[in-house]
Image 1 (cartoon, rainbow, N blue to C red):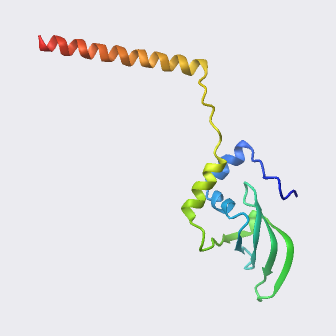
Image 2 (cartoon, rainbow, N blue to C red):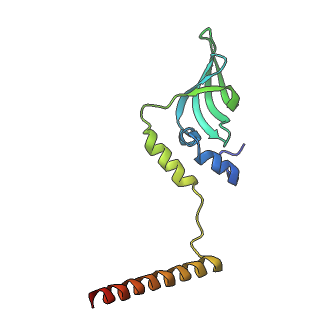
Image 3 (cartoon, rainbow, N blue to C red):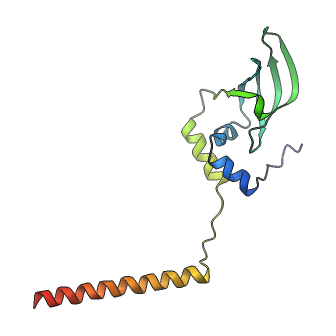
Length: 144
């Protein structure tokens, strides 16, 4: 696991990330939070990595079992199927976090038009010009 290298998502993973609330969990990277697990246990630690399927890697994690006993782990991987709830810290603005994640993970659009697009745009502009001319001609005929 390389800590300095950001995860590069595939196209399908980017779609999953942008069309679900997973982007909110992704925004919690490098923050301390609590995760409730399906087996009534909870994990508290710093989220270091979240993948597109909501598998989470925590550092300096404390695992609390149902009896309240605590175990510490330097690195802990939590599978998505075991997660029941991820607590959002109070100091995190949910809307701002989602917007910033969507902005950073949005694909860069190619601004150059293809030949087909430019031809369609040119034809559309010519059609609009023709419609405008016919409207002027009709208004001139109606005035006389």
